[in-house]
Length: 438
Image (tube, rainbow, N blue to C red; front, top):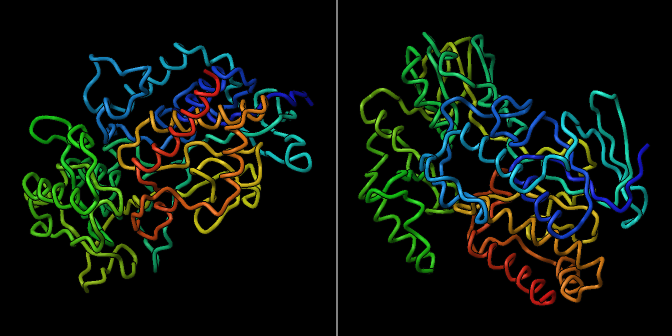
């Protein structure tokens, strides 16, 4: 057993883990990083063991709204980079800030357990090419991502064809000559359906509910770069943005898409114009939710039925921290209940980084989360009054930073926040820490 009780264990070298590594290094907080793969990049490296990437995948947000503020994506990179360009970006980020030597690669963390009461330290156990090893650490920072554990539904009946989750999809050739049903019309589901149209014998898209569709470009500019110049009340923002969507998208219901049963921004919009294009051209049929399956026949809830050779479930992912007791994470409902989605109300030696989703948050918003946590750890060590104030605040009966939004009651929305509300709260703490140090 190795001993490093002054150091923290940082789990994950994806974009969130790299952001945490950078700010921990800047704050002079010793840590040991652990990464399952042989390199950095997380799911953006399609060759990583638990990557859920597929060959046609690109960012759904523009690079200028996604990049780290102090490490811009180059002008030679497309406005909506491919997964390979993003992988290279994160590798360059790690090299630029000197983060690689701070990680153990090909090291899978299999257990993280407290040694006693909060503050007594943690024992972290990992498996690498040397076998199973363990070490003692001052605390644990979990940054292993949110999109690696497939949420596979239990379809009623038995399907005699090929049933896969989107996590198992890599290449459009997997659809060649098959009758394909894609279940789930989130961003990945729509991307994959568009791939299948060009390779499958036919492709249908089964939807439980309607979505708001956002084009990638508005007036020749990335759509996500046009908002945010003026802070508008949500009722007015919905009205204006809804009008813009009607101009550029039209009415998806005329192509067979169901009408959303919620207001704009109460769920993540689908950033995809091609799925509407192909539905409008009859290349893609929109089907309702599945009622039951018999052999290769899928019966839908509107009474219709069709035969398929493959069902691809684009039904999202579950939060998955298999190496730690969920009770230690203050798990409530579908997600850990943590102050600003990162900080345990009672423990100062356990943090979850990257368990956050918000339209337009980008990597900079996640970098800010990591910086807040790193400055808090440093502040506790130095007796900083801001750290004491933050400690008291996170022990209160806090609520998620939704900004009053009534998000859909779905597992994937259980850690969704309002970007403006969240960033304001996080950056206010960072500013207070900086002023004390100044």
